[in-house]
Length: 397
Image: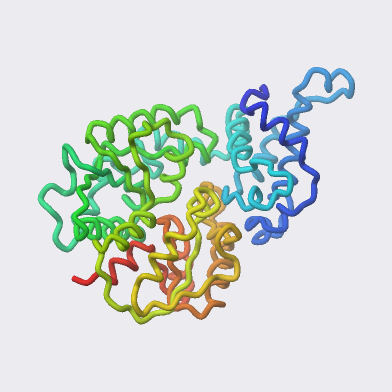
């Protein structure tokens, strides 16, 4: 084992931790579980001990021994039960880049052989099928067949101005497939020349980063970039914030290629008069997805889109924008601890109900899937919609 999974900057930043525990106070996993060992401050303390125990000087001076496999496995159990929501990073008073540190820590534990066995399943699924769910990748665009009037080409074109990168969740989960259907029909109505990549679309790479499998990332990045290049596209559209943020932060894409989230594109289309909206009489609130809000700082565009719909009354959540509380669907948590993920979702829905809104709108297929799963299982009387679904409902047809 070595400390090579960390950048020098990360090793320096760790030493700045004052153990103020603010990160523990706002952590959704800590609040939902009551377990302080899921907090960032606990994680940094444990990580420091591991790193120092690996250093020869500390071993000689203090007789420090490297942690046993059992100790690492126990620590791993706390590290992977995190949504990677980055709220800890948002509130850190000394500015430690905690989310990136958690990704490096997960990679370290994988390299050390101390990780949840579900990681092996994620690795095998990605290697064999190029998506995290082990679905047939040839079926990635089959949701098009569920559209009211699917085009003969199924939106699979040799060339197009834009590529709509669907993402694994929207491609395969029935609860989320209404999102790409809605967005495709909006793009069609707005005369946007777009194509899907179909089976040539591979996982964006976010699940492997979250699983500590960064070694796999470059192959997937290079494949997706080449698939877009072959289409001659100048723009890539994402409805999934995690796909968008992964491309934005980690892909080495050319400066001539524009990447844009659906909420940003919808705002542009509305302002340009390419999307005509009818009146909707409903009260809604908005949940900021972690990767879109805290990650990409996209806060205003979704709200502008919602307010552009005649008749819609908009109310804010108690925690919103950079302080928005995670829905429980991030960081591969559902695969690691489904009960904890559901409890975080419960707390989210309770906050939504406080607003008196008829629907909670978000801009993330995983948020929709997580919140809608909880709402349906517990018969909670509220709608959960992606912003594309809301706009689709308001389209003047």
